[in-house]
Length: 208
Image 1: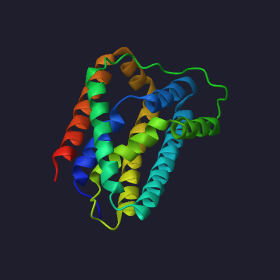
Image 2 (image 1 turned 45 degrees about the horizontal axis):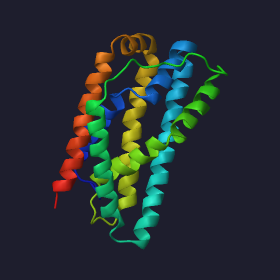
Image 3 (image 1 turned 60 degrees about the vertical axis):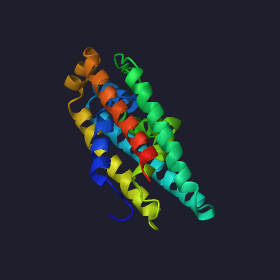
Image 4 (image 1 turned 45 degrees about the vertical axis):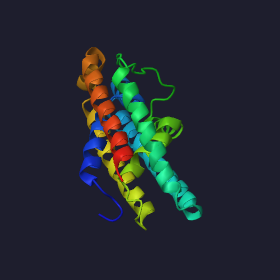
């Protein structure tokens, strides 16, 4: 695929990351349980819209950097690899607690759920940093199509994430109770993703 390497690994890693409980998961489950399936689905699409914003912003930012510096992309990949190792070690050492699901929302309309879903995602600086660190690891430094490759990877990640978020919204009650009542599930996912991050960062450091 143009400008992309190890797409299968990226897809598997992306799906595993989508399954890991986090603020987006808590928001969707909270809306779904408190206000119903329609609000949960609207929340999922709001989160997806925010992720598309991050994908486009990161791709445009990288293209601007690459236009002025030939070695900038390699530097970004190295910094991103170090960041992934840091995140991985942190997740391996972290003890996962129960998800804190929000239950009180100012407005209960589907549009409000969609709008707040966008803001929840767009205003999270950790999401922007993650996109800049994770996606470049799967782009060929010698490719002349880095920006299209970046957009392809980003939209693939958004698509798999949206599918998972819609599943969460549809089966919110049962899944919400399980995630809240059994933190072992979240802890196992955290350890799996942490190991994956360390692997990706170490793989980058040892690749010539």
